[in-house]
Image 1 (cartoon, helix red, strand yellow):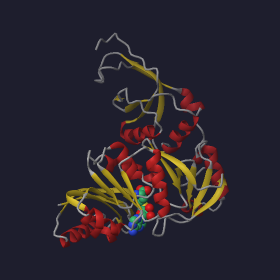
Image 2 (cartoon, helix red, strand yellow):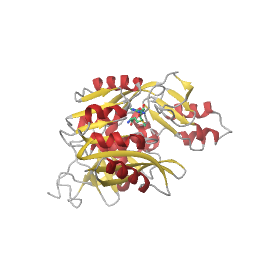
Image 3 (cartoon, helix red, strand yellow):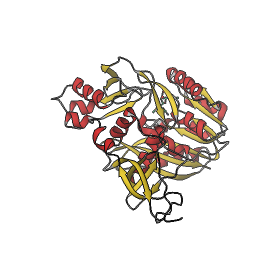
Image 4 (cartoon, protein in one colour):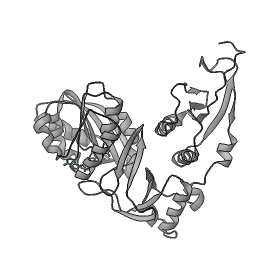
Amino acid sequence: MNSNSKLTFSNPAFRVLKKDGEPCRRLLDELFLLNYSARPFADDVYLYLPLTRRPNGDELSTLFSRLSHLESFALVSSFSQEGNESGFENILLEKFVVDAAFSAQEKQPTVFDILGYAVAYEMVGDIAVIDDKSVSEKASETVSEIAAAILAAHSGIRTVLLSRGPVSGEFRIRDLEFIAGADKTATVHKEYGCIYNIDLARAYFTPRLSTERSRILSQIHADDFVIDMFAGVGPYSVLIAKNAQPKTVIANDKNEAAVSLLVENIAQNKVKNVVPLNLDAVDLAKEYAGTGDHVIMNLPHNACDFLDTAVKLTKAGGIIHYYAMTSDDDLFDGEIEKIRATAEKQRRSIEVIEKRTVRSYAPHQYNICLDVRIC
Ligand SMILES: C[S@@+](CC[C@H](N)C(=O)[O-])C[C@H]1O[C@@H](n2cnc3c(N)ncnc32)[C@H](O)[C@@H]1O
């Protein structure tokens, strides 16, 4: 590269510490802000993710709220370079100008800024769901004050609900109480370029598994036959069908309401290779035994009850993605033994490909995933 040459980006870039690159990349992708025609680049400390355009107010507030735990991030408005020490042939960097408007004027207060303490809540589409544990710990503040802070901090949120306890029952649904804003439980949620109709009162959904869904997606090859035994409204199935060119995705759930949302989500994401089914998962083996290249078992509290069916569904060399809740005194081994014992009863063997802690669930309790090949 000619060291006198100069390249100026008219669009901004998002700057984060290198170690925080992946969650930022995913969020920018989810907001349709990532510029895939320009290459990300890095210096010794930071990663710079090129954007297609400057984020709007709602997007800025989403970035601030979802990334508030990071040590550092900024919108970089322009850059240039002398020389090519960074190794990016098409990019010349001279200096980085951090957009002051982003960091100073456009920063909306966070819920923490308003209340002075952290509150656990998740955002699904335009609904925020407060975790009731964080409310009981803060007796001095009322739930409606917390809701008002959430509405003030997130201009995209229209409804605040309180979740009374964790998801429960066969269909893993939350007991929800309306707190503020528009009284509704249905919303539209975007994740990795897919759009999902969600009804939190009728079917399970959490955005907290988005990274996990993308990890599974990365393992699916073209023409794979995928069986999503506990598909819910379809966040694994639709994502895979849209991005991996599988032969077929069998998307099954016993909850009729989940399947009717799944059918809507298949249609609105224009995926043609998903077969929605409303069966008890144990019945899947009647038709699909020995077909699965990938069998997804996202029913962490009792996936072990369905292992016999899952092994039957998996073709020789296929992979079961097995989710479970375990404690830190035995994160993986006990569950691996259950899978091994079930496989051996069917004269099959296993090879553990990956052991992974997906997220912390409660003190000393973890949601784990095992990717296990069934030979
Ligand atoms: C933890 S949720 C996961 C849903 C979805 N995979 C997701 O990530 O959003 C588990 C799902 O399994 C469904 N389910 C529970 N028991 C089932 C069974 N016996 N057969 C089929 N689906 C079942 C529930 O209705 C629920 O939607």
